[in-house]
Image (cartoon, rainbow, N blue to C red; front, side, top):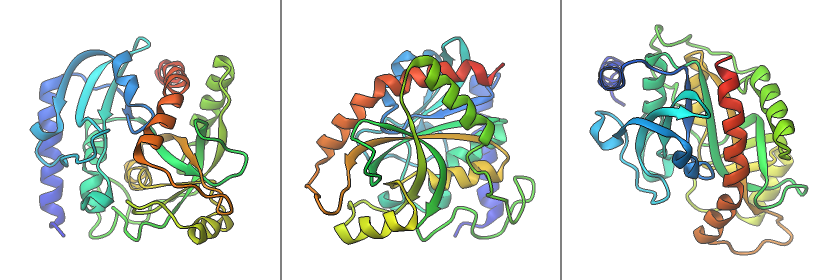
Amino acid sequence: MQPIEQYVDAVNTAASLLRERFGSIPETAIILGTGLDALASSIMVEDQVEYTSIPGFPELTVKSHQGNIIKGTLAGASVLALNGRAHLYEGYSAREVTFPIRVLGVLGIKNLIISNACGGMNPSFAAGDIMLIEDHINLMGSNPLEGPNHDNWGPRFPDMSDPYDKALRHMAREAASDEGITIHEGVYVSVVGPNLETRAEYRMLGRMGADVVGMSTVPEVLVARHMGIGVMAFSVITDECDPDNLAPISIEDVLAAAARASDPLGRLIQRIVPRLQG
């Protein structure tokens, strides 16, 4: 593991580069994961930087994740957008995956909106549905907060009684109602991947209390909450994981289901972002 002093220096260096490049920094950031990548076209871009140009940012290997950070306006509100994310299954550590979130925290981001694609285990969920995450279960076997704590970033033992801010979730529900968009609420369980689960694993995860399963988000949430950033997160259900009626699924199927949810989720985010600045 990289010494904490070197990691902190790397984060500060990346933050300084972006602050110099972007000038003023918005208070709201969005992670455009699978299901929100199309939202990038709705952002009025002021400037953007490729991840590969930012020291410390992971290089993305998943084709559906673009890999650039955008400063612009969305529905009249100033935002930073991380267009794509790294995953543990790509071979990165939890610290490396969450490096961009550390940079956002140092830049002064106050609110973070996250999206992901997931498998739906709750029988009332269908492919293409949207779920607002109310809690999570971490089964990744790693934690980005492991190792020495940098006290200037957050406490050694951060509280997780409300990782997905209650006030932000209320705002999301109101925005969904205003837009006439139906959203579920539930628990997200994170696993490493990249394989999908077996029938027995789906049964186990459902009995644990999870509604959906995915391969991201939780490390980012842990770091954001450690740094005092408010979090709102949405899952796009891309496949129905009924262990008694399980059918093979391809990445093309996943992307097609995510695409079906991109319009309503994008409209929802555009309704929410201005309210975060109010």
